[in-house]
Length: 77
Image (cartoon, rainbow, N blue to C red; front, side):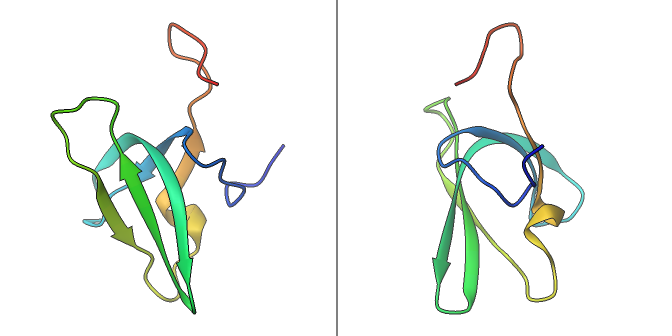
């Protein structure tokens, strides 16, 4: 099975939000610049604006990305 750090850009993932408690399903992309990384979170619902989660030093990507949604009443690919 692929590791949770193998992010397929634009696919839907369960992500832990910056508050450390809330979860959301979002299309994500990993943005890496120098030694910093962030998740760009996009919604299929146009009522919700995109947002970015900064990856804190010492926290692995797997803390924020809990898993990819592969199927939910229909196939996602």
